[in-house]
Length: 127
Image (spheres, rainbow, N blue to C red):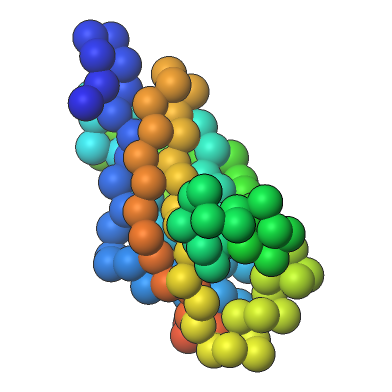
């Protein structure tokens, strides 16, 4: 819960399935607070092992798949485009969908985390 004077993190809108087109994941965010929302979003792999159970293994650790900065006016809904690493984009294309963790940080220091699924080829071409 944000403290006094802190802006709450923007909310994830439209469910937990995020579309990936090429190397870009689209993250729909809404700023519900009275002030504008600014900060960063990051998509991380979830890792294959729980913390403390071989998590020092390279394959088991969570990795950053991509990140982006955002700035949203109060009351607005914005699609934030996150550029994925080549490895992450290739994995999404190969597997069709992958589990990930979305981390939303605000410039005031608050953070929210969401479990999401990245889906290949579901983006619309209508602009």
